[in-house]
Length: 428
Image (cartoon, rainbow, N blue to C red):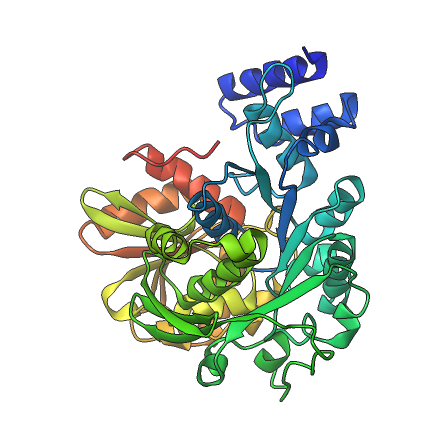
């Protein structure tokens, strides 16, 4: 019997009884009372730990990787809530271990915040890691993106067995990034040349004519490529074969992340991979909560789209037709969102000009409304209080499809409001 586990589980129960998810505080406490808990628990796993990091797409990519690994018969532990600090991982472990501290899983797949991942890998070196992208995000925490790339490189250097890199990101594909990696298997994923314009790097969004730097010889011996997108169908190329899959996932950014998930699972499973089962599992994956999640209100869809970087917001805007959708934008600047909202000025909102934006809400609602004004986008209502904004938004647009672009804490608040009206998946 582990007394620290029992104490942690008791704290978790109390947190949930008081109306919280219990996803962070119990993890913080067990880190204090039992610093070896996380390493001791994860060291039990026969296939070790997988770390997924990068600026955009961690939560949905992690969900895909978990589903694909489960299709191969593996029991997977993951930090399902998207709480991607070390305390979030510790809290998720608390929920899954038994009273003696045993974890019933074969492998752990963890999405980790770029900065917190550096602390995590010092305690628990991952066997495998996946790096999605390096984009400007939360400048108040990370600084400029070269600093973010160095954080990701630290994770890569700590990885023991294999690394997967986005070859279309110039900072990840550079020799500077890869030269210090000692893992014996370094692979890549990317998009075909004719799709490249749809997935610009951070530099390309700022008008620089840049291409991914040439990689060292033989660094990327295996590449998984997204070759075509046709509605909800995507064609991927690997093992000298094209594979076309119908997807439940929405948004071209999620389809790019599907290529990343395929590359990582192929690396982990190796020659025993059951390709048909893997692709069938991919076709069934639905968006992670708040990341393109659709919630029905009185029979009409309300889609929640998490936005936190210029590229992510741009790709989200490019993935729908505003002509037949009513739009709300919710912008908070709490710690989990990032305090610096200057990135909104790097998003082009002209696509919203014809239909306008119905409601802008959140702590930084007036900043968002001002940004839209500069792109000549009309806003019908500005309301900083999210509960009031959601109630009015639903009442005035009762019968139309709705899409809400929201930062992280705004998304959580909106889900709480929607849960008062309909069944919303509880993520715990």
